[in-house]
Length: 296
Image (cartoon, rainbow, N blue to C red; front, side, top):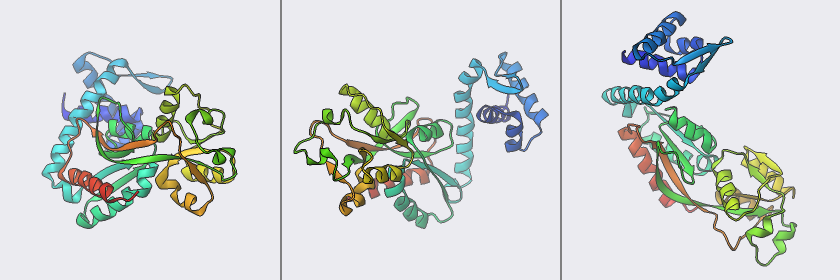
């Protein structure tokens, strides 16, 4: 068993397709198949099963994957550091829509000035996809609002943000002197999709108070939700940084909810087994610096 076998196995696991794995590895399909068979023979287990021309991972294969990925990633990290990866390599960074809109562009622009030869690849997505990217080694770092409970990930706090309740100026709630979470029980909610950090935060918050949450709208687009609120189609709870302009324009209004806090902590997240290069650590420092100087 060699590191080559592990790299082939990891690629086949991630693609779940011998043909695509062979293309990525620049190998022939028979060579990839033979390497997997040699690995299975060496350990005396079945890692994949082929059923109806489709490839399925066995339970043994699922247990073997994180260990193999760690070994392959550790070797890759060693090679990167030896090849001056900090200046001529790639840093893969993910961010939620809020942090990817208001913070990440500033950090990347400033960081790119100091490291012009370092390529920074960015993925803006919801929390679930970012977490999967970190676990599958498709991302080196991710910026998220709210906590991470996965035991394989390390989350470092680097600032705070706040969600706010927004509504059309003519919404009946806008005229109430004081507003409590129970007042929102029967409201029409326009919300982010399942899997987003903001949605998870609100689902948990409402569940703790015993209030069912069944949105009228679910969208991956914060802009679409804001437009819906502007048309008085419902209310929403969104990051203050993203709705500030609409509030200033008077297109929507915000009301304080007296009995709950919508304050959240932002985190820089990485895999616990991930080797963080010098440039990755410097990028984390830049995130802290920009967050501390942000007025939002």
